[in-house]
Length: 165
Image (cartoon, rainbow, N blue to C red; front, side, top):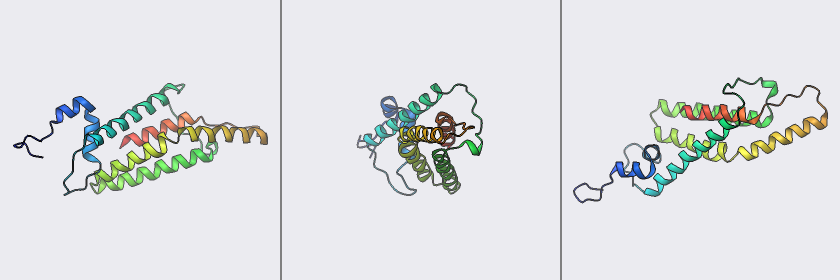
């Protein structure tokens, strides 16, 4: 890409077309320090789609919350699915913190991207199915004091932790 050859990319045009967040995400991900990076509009479009997915997941969670306050659930109330997804986000937080401390921004953002895209957003339906399955099993066994944490509260906590980075 050369400004004198006229094949440069105007960032303002890219921002108008895809948005600033999509451009930022594109420039951070997929690039290692010291390497040249080829610019593809398809990557910016994929970043825009990712930002849209995060926006839609946030709206879904906030629309389904009864109150805007989320309290930390008691460990005894967590289902195995709750424990799995919380463990995954805690591992993500540890890994991303290590990458950020080493200034490996591209790797850190890629890990957050992979978690949100592959586990958090695509796993919601599966997470809800596990919630219903757990509820039915508890009802069949006739637990008297069964209180089940709503998946939306866990999803909200995951969203907050995932977006802190």
